[in-house]
Length: 232
Image (cartoon, rainbow, N blue to C red):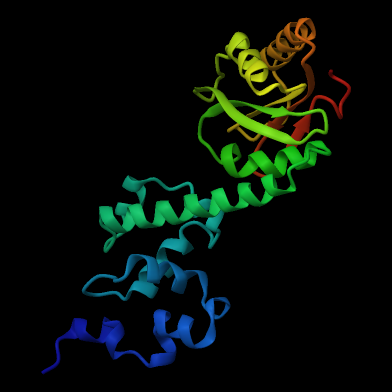
């Protein structure tokens, strides 16, 4: 008598239903998110196929990959059939996706608006559960020379080293900078601390002839620009 779990083994599926074979035969675009995820984890459990497991995981995050990318190792391992290795594979894939998105934005190379700042930085800080403060360094054509994290803190705020921000600018021969940080709460309203650090860096930059062009607050789906709102 065939064991019950055998029916869940991919080797017993139709060739068209096997994610790897389907990708080879029909192309990557033919696969669902669950099928692509199933290729990553390789196998399900004794009572559930890899595709079924992945459908279940995605269902808990409303089938949104952006929400899946927020799950940590412990949260992923809470699903039966997902061990540490599978959880790490999923997290690594989500991170590669974020980096690709940021790389595409960076290839544009020139900051032309607050929207282009959002496109560059949202994949990096837009979905974090804590605040991070970054500086984008530009040349005289507004092309990105470098971007650097200056601080990382709780969702209540961060501590920013003004001297370090300008030291890096001098090392890069940057003529201007754009300040950016995320609001994990989703609020786009700048706090008094946000306004104070903007003014502090802008005033210090004047002495060195390094202009602060903007300060952009990033959330998961939107942004707020100090420059667009005449706060600089």
